[in-house]
Image (cartoon, rainbow, N blue to C red; front, side):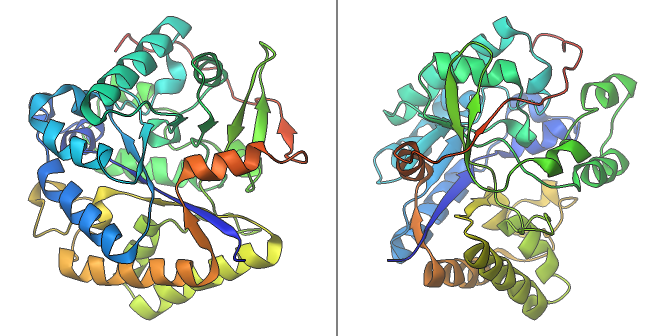
Length: 329
């Protein structure tokens, strides 16, 4: 039997990218879900892949998005919680704010899809001990908010150079994309042991073993704008490194992996958006083919249940740096 790999997609919407970039007009919640959701579902169905969609609660609460999200709920895919307001400074929320954020998203997602999420991923990989405690208290099976790489500060510096941010926004986003400390966390799944005595499984977004650089599809597609051959070799080499080191990879996708600059002109600033959608779909198809050749592709909830059954799953205490509380969302 092939080893396990889990596959997921963070269903970030047009407005959420505009919001983080501080672009005007995001408050009207412009959406591309009617375009991208059918495209992704058709793509996955043609390849018989089942994945986990992490849905933003704000989108689920807007009636015009219900039809697209109901299609996910009526499919064989899983649904996860990606917060309500999609603010990558979730780690700065108080316990009351986190409780409200996760509960509101959960209720809206269940109404729109008919599914109760059992997994969570923080926007921008934002997570804290408080977030994990709330997830465990609400019965979530797993968290998937960690990205164990050292390049977070570089990604944040690039973001600060390209986004329209004032001093308040820069302070708010001061730990966006994580710190060098994140690169010291395990690449393999483990269980968080929380101060309350509860616990929750953590499935990190997999990075290149040893080198600890990302290889989820948005990164690979960006590399392919310079050389498609080099990008695919990089992805294949990362998968081979996972096989050799015993890592069960959890591969992350985003809507922009399926949308080109010809689809969403507002996001021309985003890396890789100079590629047309047709080209992206061809390349993603090849990358997922490489993944399927080596691993059995499963949704994250199925992966989490397999991990829960293990008696040798490592245990880790939270090591998050406490941040000053943010303004209420």
